[in-house]
Image (cartoon, rainbow, N blue to C red):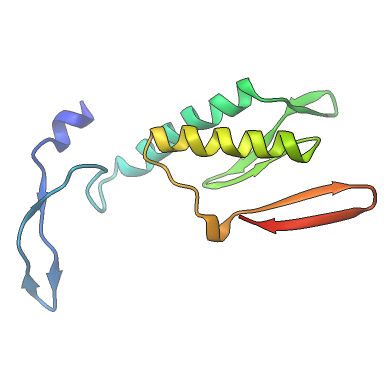
Length: 122
């Protein structure tokens, strides 16, 4: 249904009251489209389900988890660095399937253990 709504959609950019040339929109939703947040959430949920079901999890008060989420902020939780790397790689690969991109400038990893921690920026 969404594909049909957005098929053959065109847009133009207006700068200082001057409308530019029209061009075809090949992906995404129109700016301000009320369906946009819903599509984003649905795609993010599909992406997160892949890592929730397919990767190792830790136990927090008997509940097995490997991520915490709020809106578009995601914390990936793992018991060791190799599992963390694998989970982040899976998340990145799966997100790309839905046109979602991880922002490397805003991504960091923290590995805790042996009373010290390391922070890495992607």
